[in-house]
Length: 442
Ligand SMILES: [Zn+2]
Image (cartoon, rainbow, N blue to C red; front, side, top):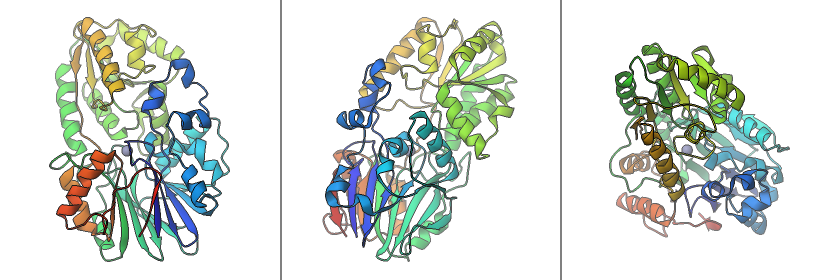
């Protein structure tokens, strides 16, 4: 078999990998690289064309598949989870591949919204695959989605069954034995794979250099509980901001708001988008527990209501990275009217994604909040990605024939390579350091 590492091997983003066995090709993930887009001026962000996105390096450069003569041979596009660096390139790239798209119900639900938002018309058949099930792609290929834990629901390790063995795609995951939503990882299945000829394992290296084990989401939940239940008083407003796709984290915030006997209001378009998708596939029912407010006019109304009765609400909103255009950003910039007061609290149930743009944005946001004497709580978070010992556990459990580190730049890929060497792999023999646009034969 041959594996082409299209994107996500020089950076954290635009993940895309293609596997060719015989005359058939399968693509794993089709994501975007966000930093070049975040850097654009506001007007430039509107109506971004595929050509423009390619030019600024935001899309995986899949022209390599044209050069290899693989494009017409693609039989499936398989998407592991909902994050934008794994699915957001679909509206721009998928149409050129004459094949279905496979994703879990939640991922598919969000993908449909993303396709509609981009006004994309895709000829691809959308096939929903449940976790821990297998679907036939062709007479000689099958795709299996194995339940894994991450920071968004229904994430999968994708297992491609071919005549030449299995390719296991492990972007992104953590081994969380106490997830807040969904099941713990399907260890039993991963352990079985060891005896079923895993020819290649493509695995995230994002935190391969972080010692130890990534704490469970349960830990983040306790941190959040401590802050939320401790901070409430009879005259303050409480804002919790987190990633809109982190439904488990949001669910914890909803529960603590209920314990405080405060009403929950979800603010922001992307908050609404991911929550509604989760409701459509019956993962949560937040509509029953609070008000989901997506549009500016309605947000204005509800904020003025909250301002007058600030101790009656918990607001869950976007803006945890200080991103321009998010609800919190608009509030501090007075594009949305809300007077923060001494003693109000903003809880960042997230970590700043360490990109200079995010760091700068967050700094601006926090300094404006501080000026209004708002109490700030940061890093109420547990990562969705595996640390070094989780990765070691995965390698030991599956014992793949070959390892390809993915999801990072050279330094990150190298950190995973070092770990693989500790587990007995040798570079060039059964451990391969790849770059974007390269191909390897296994
Ligand atoms: Zn992810």
